[in-house]
Length: 149
Image 1 (cartoon, helix red, strand yellow):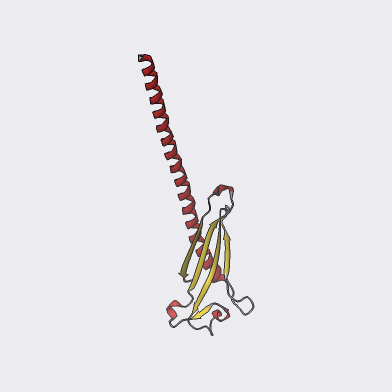
Image 2: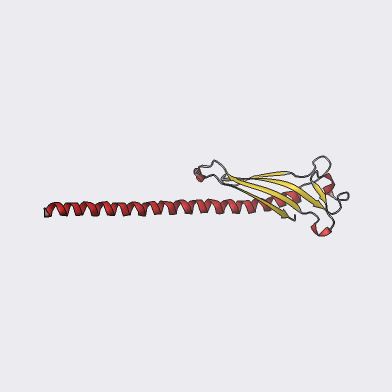
């Protein structure tokens, strides 16, 4: 009887230890997934900020005239192909729409003060691509900002 009790005790301890090891492995896999998700989210937010700054540069360098009108959409893809940005210019704010290059803008808005002259409202959408580096993670961020080019 003593031998069988020892075997039962040993089996119980083995099952208990294996259960605890499974819990440790599950917790570590959750930690790795969380770190990976956080990394991709931070990369997407940094790419969003960079895309907004590049859009401001594109607006500053764009030649507005009666044939080319104003910029409405700007597209960017990250250098590693993991993210893409779609930026829409919702509004151009102009102090005097008739005497500036903003008169060619369909989405130009007259304002009452010269302090906000040249401001633009940008609607930015950042999303992951089907890059193998992203795995199966799908992210999509959007942001509306007022910028002064």
